[in-house]
Length: 192
Ligand code: GDP
Image (cartoon, rainbow, N blue to C red; front, side, top):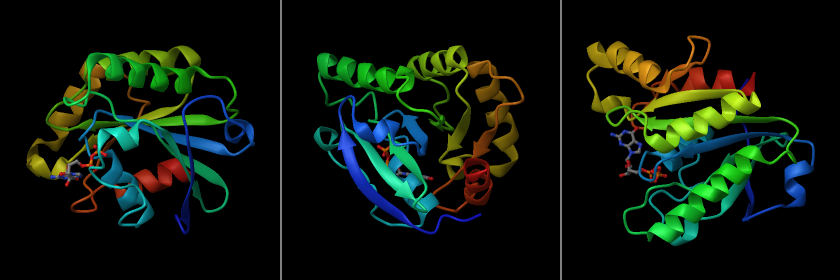
């Protein structure tokens, strides 16, 4: 299967009818600057679907993109912007947790984007715990894999597996928007 069409629908900040319109939702979560926007653009082969490196002010919303007229990619706000106040950072984290926990969505899965050189942050661990508790399917992305030599990829993935304490059942996908590594693998996992 392929991603043929991708269209921005809307941004939300809380409960909204779009959550319960019956379409499956695949949400993307990650630290700011982890390359989440680039990853969504590369998956959908659209250069500017998600504005790369847009200012934190514009990315506090939960943005919905309709894929192939049948499911949503949901871009959750990036967390950990250095330029954002503690209070604002807290409200972004709360918004992410709210989305993960809301039971308005029938079919939800999550892509956790990690920087291959940074690994698993405390908030990533919190996200993973919530997903585990609620039995929500997820995959981990070792992103910006082009920043690590290919011979070290296996080691980096093992590190992420240990830090996140995820079972071997959970896929960890090496990804690079720069080289296209992982694009086909992730697309087939997500559209399955
Ligand atoms: P976001 O804040 O998570 O949405 O991250 P962006 O997609 O805006 O990317 C943040 C920075 O990382 C930008 O300077 C991108 O050019 C860079 N970047 C994104 N993806 C990759 C990648 O696969 N490899 C490398 N080396 N850099 C990347």
